[in-house]
Length: 512
Image 1 (spheres, rainbow, N blue to C red):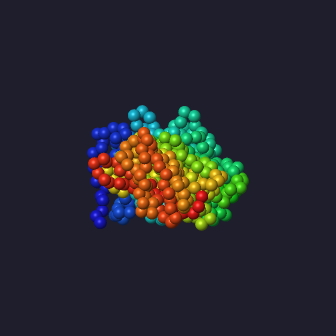
Image 2: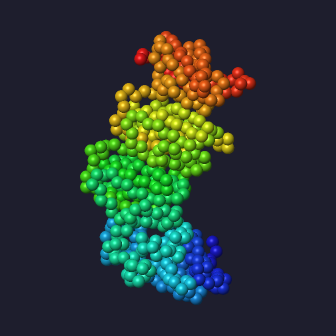
Image 3: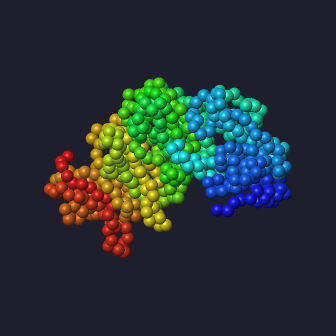
């Protein structure tokens, strides 16, 4: 690999000299942070007082980015100062005391267009992947160039309060109490929904942190025991993350009293490798509620998924994906009829930590031109996950667009399964029967509302039974017969064709 001579640095700075202010300082910032020190090789006889000599010193750990930035600013005619103070950098945990030489750091301020602005080339150039990964990768972080004082104070506390550049400087104690917000938090345009402190005091073990996210990002969270007295597996599935409008809500359900760290992640996808740690909190829990053995099902986030924005659909009844219900509920969405919808319902078995299928207890009871309504029955106490999937003419594979978490504390008596609807179940409303299990040797009355159907028939044991039309209502009685079997409902929607499409499916079994 060839050596990079010092004269190239001088030429690069000469090129940007005609520029002024932010443009010049940004060129210097980008030149420094773009250098991957893992790939650069330096001559051993480099003058340590030159820009390339300073880069070599940075790689060897005996020099700083701040000196290099100040040197280049000086050559370009920009005023720059190195500021001493404390910072919430690598190894700092929310709520930790700051004193002595721990967490001492430096950063710079450059005078641009009549005002001092913060620049941190050190943090702008370095990016460490994971606490156990010793490899240092270099990646430019634009947050650390001309950082606003209101954002800068979350990570940097200067010895001289005047260098906070705030109308009302804060104290060191106030700095410690500020939440630990990291650069991705600001890069992704997130905001705190309330004025949180770095330490959350909990008396019940169930607390919420709310973050405002204007875009469709993916979120995740992790709980850790501060002192290691709670095993990591005990903290799995103790977080419920959900989106409500522009708010992302992180709900904890701690297993026992103690001290914990809550780490919040964000990214463009649910892939863990692409998520950044955006903020952290310490939770001091003094007691917990009796139902602490209950955990939450695994899901990156409940509510609207990133795919939701690709479809013309909107919540009609339940905008909050966390639903507390006893037994039965009806969930409706406004959507166009050309949208192909499907769904699933699962029950979270918190003892075995797995999801169990309960699809027969969710049913699209009504699908009209502009709306779909789902009936959901919860036969057992526990947490259910109701997921919606959508596709259209341009998308062949259904995408998950919404997830509900339904907490059922007291199921209603005699909760029954629902019929199974096909993808052709559209422009129809089921009135009777809603019970998906039909008794043997019984006459069952069917009532289906549809303004567009040409004919609706029922098939059981190979025998076809036509329903009679009165207005928009199709109705009739059908004998279920002697055998355990399936009972199917078909519809014909084109007068010119003898084509019947499946609509509903029931199970004939047992007695009343």
